[in-house]
Length: 146
Image (tube, rainbow, N blue to C red; front, side, top):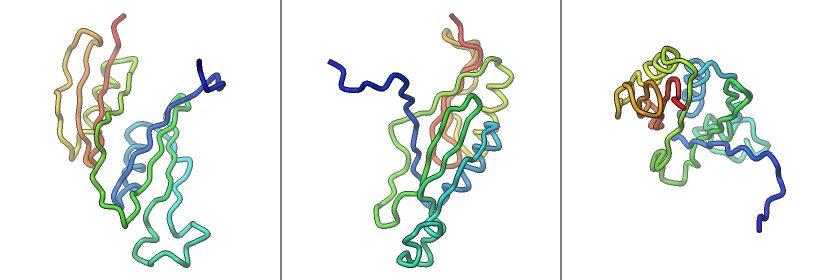
């Protein structure tokens, strides 16, 4: 028996960073053609006076709106918790054309590490995998095959 009654439930990835969340979100907005809906920092918090000055820049919540209205959330890890990086997840993007997928793949891989070169596969005309300069793993597909 299902507990949830919600008809449309969108899972939203929430990425954690270590003080560079705002830079990552601005990079993703530029590369992905997305819009930053909000970036809230400790300085924006009602508790700003209680936060050490050197931590006020850390992002508490950022929201990026991707083409099509899909969302990506992010924030900086709390400073008192050891940051272990983004683990165990890849964000997959499917593009209608190989050209668009490859352009985004190349842009995301700048300063990062390509883990699977952008090349043909059986589920798409081309796909590739990378870890970007912020430690986030991506899988890009160009022209999925039926």
